[in-house]
Length: 291
Image 1 (cartoon, helix red, strand yellow):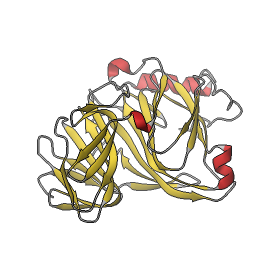
Image 2 (cartoon, one colour):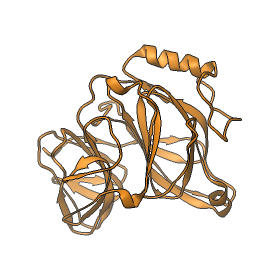
Image 3 (cartoon, one colour):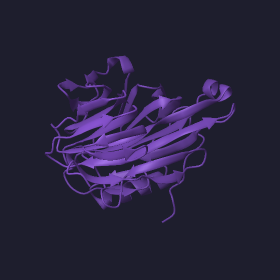
Image 4 (cartoon, one colour):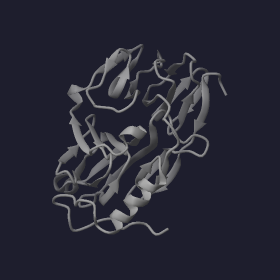
């Protein structure tokens, strides 16, 4: 293992019905990187005309979700009344806080034509002082996000601050999240302003220090070490991290909290139908798992 890398994570593959995901976080030897507590690589999955995804309404607490797409479209609906198509390059940040319900489905027009779905879904744990903040949903079109060009890397700053730029997305702790492409021969320095950092390879391959990191792998970088990332043939990558979380987090189903009592309360409220319903998607929901 090179001095630049603390750990290389090979995600576990999960079949979630209509498509497959590769889950990098949480990992047995590394639960979080900065505030990132969940990191799923979705697809690429190809759907025939008439098919699509139907993630029925379900609750979240204690976190924020970000879905970032490379291909396809997902229609978001939530219990605050927001309806928003999620399209490639745009940022849709949903703050769950004390509780929100949402669904993710393929829109009728996209479903009719057939499509490919490919992207990254992340959960960002909220600081303990913000775990029960008011829920919210914020849409930021691709054009509003800062662009970073560095030595063959073309990156979009999805959230947080890096390379002297700050995303318009409201965040709750020091963090950074970028996505973009490396041209053949790229060799750029990873931002060193955050303690915890990771490089995820969406497709292609890169070198981190002198170690090859291939498609679907996450390299967790060593703190306080200057790191350069290169690619001989080109690649698509994500960079993520930030300040360490202010304590351990519990994850049960879609619920995240620093205190088991918060999860137990949310479980009971979902079971008893206390959560608000998703507007225009009231007829279905995912039942509370057993156990």
